[in-house]
Image (cartoon, rainbow, N blue to C red; front, side, top):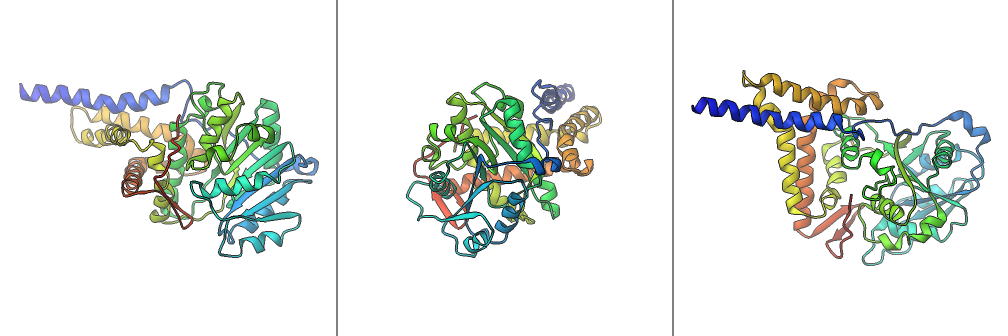
Length: 383
């Protein structure tokens, strides 16, 4: 009788990851897909007149990357207005930027209480914009030739007021290859691009590294003052845009290349932990729920792979899990064998989320660029 009860319990338990991964693959909005994308078209460069666009680049201690970022912009076309807001850098960021032709450099003022550094820099730069469109670009992002023209054409064709692209994160080490594509994969599961790009206001998301937006819309929603303490500022801005009746679009692009080197587990942990618990709304209950979900989705597969009467079902669940990750690996030209390590990636991301929570409980809301943000007044993200 005991063995029969254990057999029944095993069959029920192993069905949980099958339902999770099989259900994910069958969702009509296909959150695992990479179909939402914009790629660079170098052939558009000779005809690209970009005089209607002002680029705002908040930069803090980016001397190693700002030069390549500006060079990439100058290869996009003619007439582009570029403004670099030097956010109290202690290195040569401002000098390197000023050495490039047709680049305006603003000396950023000290960070006021209650503001996040990037948003304060953008708020100062916004006053310089007199064009119909604004490109918000991180200082570590290099656009491939033709990307901005392709982005502008897509924006017009789709009738969107806000278009953002998720950068291709630099992969130079084992840890980069193990974790950075998974970062994109989880972001797409959390904010399905198809739903975010729909007119439904309940799902809004963006990738803050590269955002092309109507300047009038930016001003109408009160950016950036209305978001001044938001750590996940890109999704918060997209939500404000949607709530104001504007149409947003989010996609992938290999033509938006991140120059920032991670390379180590520690550096990736710092990147993830600075906002992971913020993403959960600082909710301990949500953290426990996510932990339980990861255990059911990944842990139960391995728990039952060794049992003779249920291992085939556990294998089916593992194959479905891998199938959901393969489109992301194909998009970034990576071996499908990396899908075998998805459970390891998941365990590390769960650990980073707990580290983020522990930092918050100790009084540090986030740490980035030698700045620490306490709990203070919170701007909670929403889906």
